[in-house]
Length: 253
Image (cartoon, rainbow, N blue to C red):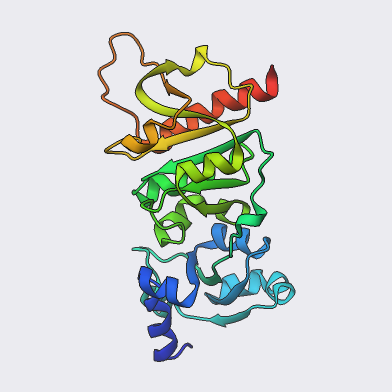
């Protein structure tokens, strides 16, 4: 059983202000929590149903985090999900230091104004799939530790570093050729991505900002089938397709 004060404290983390002030965030569900338990992320507390705790006692003791057995009713009171799923973890937000940026990577990703948490989480998951270790963000992107972002990453959040800065500053740091996804660029299937490159993905509604368009080495686009009438792809889908082509060129040519 957990106290009213514990419930109150956990529920404050549903809000961005308190996540920032306390430097904590919430993760829910067996898949995400298991990924975090097997990562370097620091987990401060876990609240799980009895059967989940019984199944995970060894890793809980190895990780050394506090854990509490809760009822389904208690889990429901602290969950952000409509249908709570077995376990909730309270995690410490990692610190991403600029000195740890890998300046020699031949592929990186810059997200410009990605505001939808679901899209942000999916992009993080796809970046992890294609082996990226760091993502650069404009300051108007969705919060990385937003619960919806955390859930959408399905654990990939623990394997990528995030750096919030302007595209100009990121370009100076990495000295990479910048390829920006637009509707009027050259098709990705006729472009060589063999050089050190930074992919720039704009927001779902506005695309890449005007100031960042000026910094692009080249605008690129995903060609649509002849006769297609779809206006655009959402940011997560576009990122996945582009990363797939870049990965293909860099690894199989």
